[in-house]
Image (tube, one colour):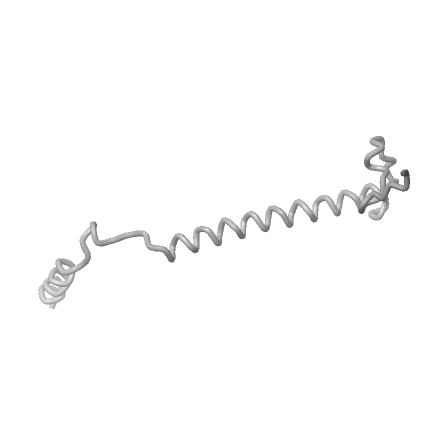
Length: 86
């Protein structure tokens, strides 16, 4: 029985693909690009969440004392700045 199985596997192994017939392919490349985009999106989202948590901590949401900004640019409210001078 083992001789028969060994012979069958030997015949099947000889008819397999050659090394020069195997290529990476576009599917693997697309998966690689999608994984890179997923990592970039997760990094961007993490940065946003950390900034949001830091702002909340600075304003005293978590029970800490509010932190007074020292930079005049940080004192400006978020959003577009409208100048009234002409």
